[in-house]
Image (cartoon, helix red, strand yellow):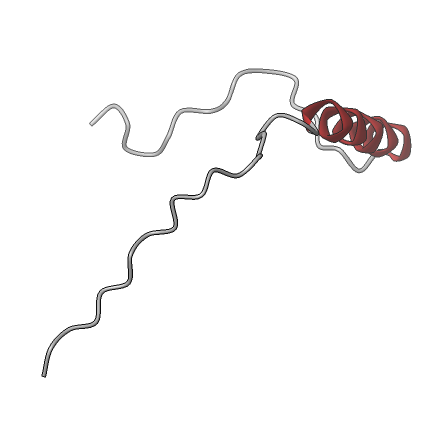
Length: 56
């Protein structure tokens, strides 16, 4: 029994990873603003506490 090897598809495609980044950022900002307005976004007033056992 032999192994079947399929050649890789090397046809260039038009794909831009950053084409919709502005729309995504805008949606995230809208969602964060809504979360702050209704109080569902957790807020922290100080630095994070040290991890347990971090100083050992």
